[in-house]
Structures are given as C-alpha cells and as structure tokens.
Amino acid sequence: MNGSNVEIDWEAARNANRQNWDDRVPLHEAAYGLDAYDEPTHISDVVSEDLPVLNRFVRGGTLAELDVCHLQCHIGTDTISLARAGAIVTGVDFSEPALQAAEALANRVGVSATWVQTDVLDASNVVSGDFDIVYTSIGTICWLEDLDRWAAQIVAMLRPGGTFFIRDGHPALLALDEGAQELTTRYPYFGDGRAQQWDDESTYAGDGKVAHPRTYEWPHPLSEILGSLLRAGLRLLHFDEGRTLPWQFSPRMVEVSGGYAWPEAERNLIPCTFTIVARRD
Image (cartoon, rainbow, N blue to C red; front, side, top):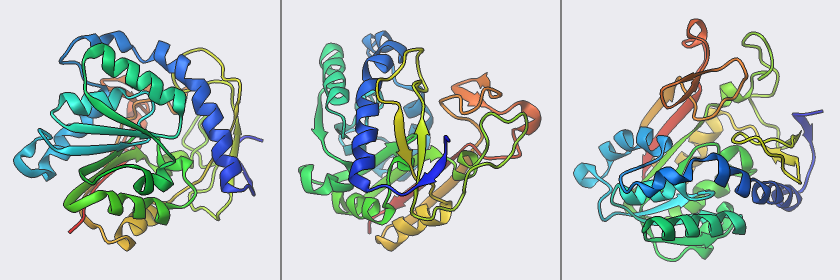
C-alpha cells in the first residue's frame, strides 16, 4: 500500500530512489521547459520566489560573486538560475544522468558551473572548498533518513558567517491524504525511523512513466528539521510558511501564479511550504 511504513536499510532505499531519479531525467528534460533558459535573463520560478528572501540575509543584498553550493540540484535549472543571479555555483546530486543533463544545459546556455556527484549525506567529504551559501529547495529532505547527518554536512561546507537556505514542502501538508475531497490527515506527521514506501510510475512533471517506480521517503516534523540545524550549531535567522507549491500535490489544487494552491476557501487552513534561513557564526 502506498505510504506504508516499512523497515529498510538506508543504502537499499537510497539505491531505489537513485534509480527512480535517474529515470526521471529524460521526462523532466521534456517537461521543465528548458528552451526558456536560452533567454539569458530567464530564471526558474523556484529561484524567483527564493531570491527576495535569501538576498535579505547575504552581504550586499545580492548573490553576486558569492560561492553557492546547491544540494540536490537535479537537472540544474535552479542552479543555473542562481548563477544568473550572480553566484559562483556548485551543483550536487546523487544522479549521474541528472548531472549530465545539468552540465549539458549549462554549457548550451553559456553558464559556468561545477557539478559534483555524491549523496547529500556525504557531501562535505566530496565537494571541494567551502561556501558563502548552502542552498536547497524544494522537495528535498523527505528523501533523507538522517537529518542530523544532513545538518552536519551543511555546517561543514559553510564558511564562518555563511548562510543556509531551505524552502521545502511543509510536513503538515505531507501528512494529508492527497486524494481526499477535503483536508484529511492520512500519513504520519512524526517519524519513527521507518520509511514510507511508494510505488508510482508517474512523476510530478510530464506524462511519461519511470522504469523503477518504487521509492522511499521519511517524514520529518518541523521540530526535527529545526532541531537538526540548531544542534549542528547554526543560528536561526528567519522562518516562514507559505501557501503555494511549485508542483500539484493534490488533484484538488488549483494553478496560481508561480505554482499551485488549495482552493481559495481552504488556502488559510494548511501551510504548503516552510522556509528557513540560518547562519554559521
């Protein structure tokens, strides 16, 4: 049953997820509207929403000439967008086909970037140097089992005074029954160490099917997310919650500027995203 809690070794779950994300690459290359990036000023909707917040917490109010590490960068559209905002970018992902697609797109549109293949939970051991900003957004940490290990990688890659930014799907949203005709909780908000098993041939973008449909995700409440960052030594600068998503979580969601939202009568009932900005002192 989709969403069932299962016991599974991290490496086995990671390998299943990697195969699934490898399969998504050609589907997302077709669905992401990559031709738009041929326009030199085009940036993704995700980065367009994140930049006004991120720029408030970096020196000079701009990413210009700052070293930015983008974790879980997938096919690089957001990484390229960060570069177009002035950053010197490094994109990190565990999928080799995704990074090949990212590099091909960057080369095609004339954007300089470094691409590193590694698991995000080992990133500090593989990625060279340190960074002014570590960035991740969106749909990322549900794929990670151990957030304390995740937070430790972030701190290890940040320079003193460096900034961490994340916007992601809200754990309260992810506990809802996506197919219900009203806002109804179905899945655990609090995790117990077990993974949620999913079997789904589709992907959040495009109409194609993946060859490896089984994936594993982990629920992480806000207390765990914030706690992992604080325990790692980061200082919280900003926290916010949002009403829209860049993907259609539920068929009942309606398209709005920049993404999807619940019908207007329900829009103030449940958050769709959270945003955290934190600093390494």
